Image (cartoon, rainbow, N blue to C red):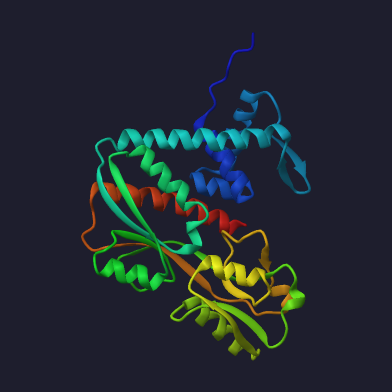
Length: 293
């Protein structure tokens, strides 16, 4: 009879970090250990499993079939572990948290985070709002939101910067539809993505025209997918039908944008603090993966 091994939770977390960030060096920085300590962790995990988790590929390492399976299980184990810890620490957390988010994150990892919070703190209630940056900040200042995850906020003292991401030129699969002058698909003003796109094109001396305007991220993606224009946006959450097109179209690189968590002044309820902690931890992890990619 084969005895079951108790997998090391820290080693599982390191394994997932190495896979997400693309190497042991980056994983070591994420988990706060030296590279040699990380290597020892993964060797111990491999010994527990009894199968090689990595194989040599060029100058680096790639997951074996057993390694890929272990990463998949590790994600589920860690998610359940973290949810259990949240539930134990947050017993008695109650009240309403009014949370706003930019649409760029609403269709990716944020809904899962909010679901985890709800399961861990059933006595607390989240009222979530997806809107544009300016509308979110205005609601914060009026006291209609407790906290919000926003883009491009650099001057507010109540903003906690989580990551800096590059803007990317996004276009359709069929670039033959994009003709000169460059057709742009953009939000209505005010929009800093729109302004950034126009500024970078003007600096490069490239002709452009606004061909499609909307106030919805879903309709923006639909317009770009239909070949109505290219847009400047963040890569995380990009639909499969679209791609980064700067090299093919010879477009100049754009600036970066900061992702921040912003609080309403005085909004420090236990429920709001817990959600802010979870959002900060998860956002840093998810956005670090995006930066690495």
